[in-house]
Length: 270
Ligand SMILES: [Zn+2]
Image (tube, rainbow, N blue to C red; front, side, top):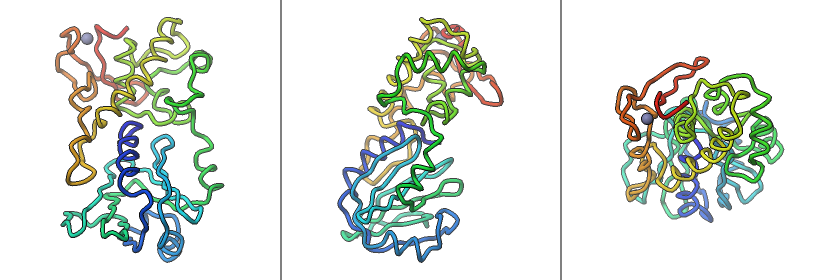
């Protein structure tokens, strides 16, 4: 499932390609992916300029000229593709935006994912329970230290809890814990200050490295995308069970922590 880096990569690519473009037609092939009747969706979105693309947690937000917001969560398997004029795309797409310049933005395989049109209040309500952004100004060492000390559970489920910190999932929680040198099954309130500091530093640095290298998911954004997915080559433990640790040559292991699968190195992580 895409996490902050993958959504930041989409945000960058979308900002460079569809901002200040006008949606002139909409194809809705999967009505379950949207939140209102198809006709109302079209009435609210059609003929609108996309003013701005932003991100909150694992959601992308398109600000429309009429003050409404399109919010998408891709969940498992969903993706976005921008087709050039006349380009043949080998998918039906759950929802497709047709722009004035004949490019088309495909929202593909929104089976669990969705694309909603919302007012600002509705969007605020949707995001109300999310924790702070780990790349934002409210993510401080004091906040992390204080919050961890109040949690008795293990780190792996805590880091992927969207109400605790927003936007981290299965892949980057493992990579962050590897970088911090801490086991995924350690209890949050039992970390010492050195470990809390290591975790505080590993969270944004891991996410930023992944953003700079295109994230780990390799489905491309358009036909001349040579950027997306390069971070897959830099993953240290995620999805590497049984393979040697790049740092110490011990074997990467897979364990289940509170029902969540977690990859880690038993020698590099304590
Ligand atoms: Zn190791």
